[in-house]
Length: 463
Image 1 (cartoon, rainbow, N blue to C red):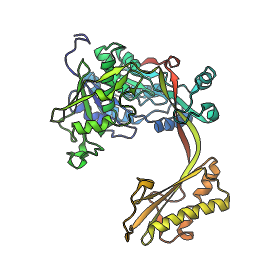
Image 2: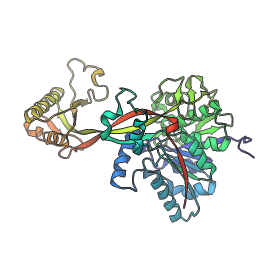
Image 3: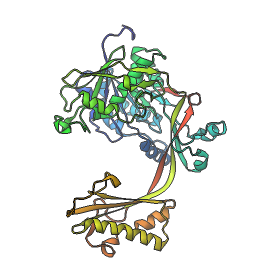
Image 4: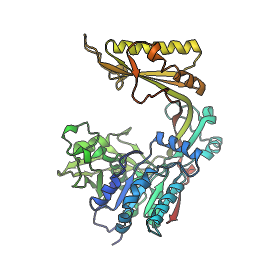
């Protein structure tokens, strides 16, 4: 049976929504029932900046090591069943990640396992050349030219699409490791390799993008983080991660393993469809532009939702670039104030710290205060406390930003003295344990680059 003649749905599962997600999800997806492929998403903009710092300290680092931890317990079963694994755990160093996977396979006795490496997203060394030849890399939100902050640029990675992943799979890779790709590409790549969809079959590609969008946030589509009725989610402590049963037409059924907890309903699917989208009529990816308003959902019951009718058009001529820029330093005071007058005391602490900064010449670029328990989540939109009521306690957090590290460190030394030299009723906040830590700030800088300027590469590493 050829790819295009395939009649059985292709079952692609999700097993990670971010770096730090459940390490046992991959094992549960592999052991819970039949799947053809599993995608694992580890990357966010902040993750890339963390990985860049790791790579600067160690040339073998810069990738999400949780992936190998999740992979090792079930690698034998994955090899035995021919399950394809696709992940962006490669981060800033996909080759090093692939080599770690190959080493893990050799240790377990699996010689000859082909690991695909998708690279070409890293544009850091080409930033000056791109700007010199007319690509401004201006900030998408502010329009500021990157040249103004060029000395502080830490990384620059274009979002690749699904084609290089599909190419690696066609070359025999059992596991594919990428750097920065769109999240949806982790699902669309295996679908392109399996079904052989044409490069201009925009509707099918858009359907694959929607499938990837629904799978990429882990259990968020199958009952986790569900605002539309979370108390009714069964067995949330063992919530199952989602699976898309994709047909050659592009239509698919979203489900989960029957043995797992959680639920897949039209409502849970709708919540995830709305996650991180701009114009619902034009969800832009390197592979196609998907029209989310064309999607039809049919709740089939028994944790099965059919997704059909997805329409697509050609992709944009530019790719998004995730750039990180060193933005100074930050630290945060963290204190608990207790009844009575907890809120009043916390607000007085803010003014006292600001006065100390002025007295000592500590220069703050910005500061932000959260009264956790009062306005930590909603800020100025938080409802006022009812008249005559007062909380038993409030957690005061004052975060500051400085250009100079020494100023951040000097502010940090002013926090603990408030226990005896500030408003009464203060106690060390959870996790304080002494002076707060000073950390570098990495600002996210979104930009665009012409597709013609990005050249993905595919390499096979064998165990």
